[in-house]
Image (cartoon, rainbow, N blue to C red):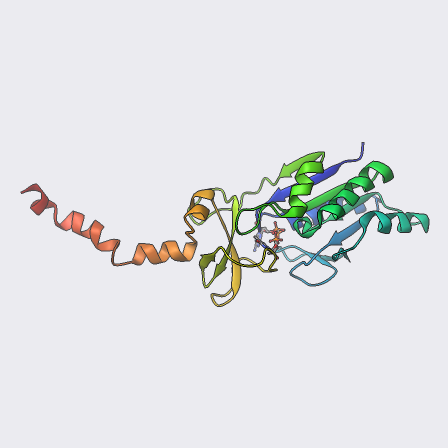
Length: 226
Ligand SMILES: Nc1ncnc2c1ncn2[C@@H]1O[C@H](COP(=O)(O)OP(=O)(O)O)[C@@H](O)[C@H]1O
Ligand SMILES: Cc1cn([C@H]2C[C@H](O)[C@@H](COP(=O)(O)O)O2)c(=O)[nH]c1=O
């Protein structure tokens, strides 16, 4: 039975790498897939992984109709054994409906990859529709980690290392950006709620308000006892 599968996780957890691996494993066995993406960091019509791999893809921009595109391709005698859709969080809900129709009416497997929630921990509309429609939602097994060592479950947007909570839902970007750029950082829920990024945690640890308290505890022990 063909399936609509949503591979979901935070930024930087290996979604695009997995998409490229699925593509590689299937194409080396003679299957023919169609690869789609939207607003990849590497540019239009590219699906890229931070491991350095990149492949060409069809840009599924606003208004793009997956079902019509596949029907046109098949009616011209083209073949399609599976569909890969990366950066699926950016898709409109109706585009996700088209992907479900590709599975049900054209009997083609669809593997969609994307982050579930935005920098405010709100669902992207495309991801919400995928959760609603997918046969399976798979959470990636490679854990991205928060600076504290806990599993990262949330995406923070940062400016100069400081978490921001205002702004457009879609701003294409990356983790590990230089401090003057808008960037992203993955965090555990506790630190996302506290808006505590690696940079602000480091600054707090170095703050004169924090260190001397511990030092004072040690040096003042005799005075505390007396
Ligand atoms: N230099 C590296 N060496 C080994 N693994 C790396 C390196 N750089 C990135 N990675 C791996 O790639 C993952 C990010 O892969 P990518 O497919 O780009 O993520 P996503 O699409 O989920 O944002 C990281 O979590 C890490 O496991
Ligand atoms: C959290 C969040 C992310 N984005 C953008 C930033 C990147 O361009 C992509 C995610 O790509 P990845 O391959 O999963 O790292 O999404 C955004 O536009 N808005 C957000 O809130």
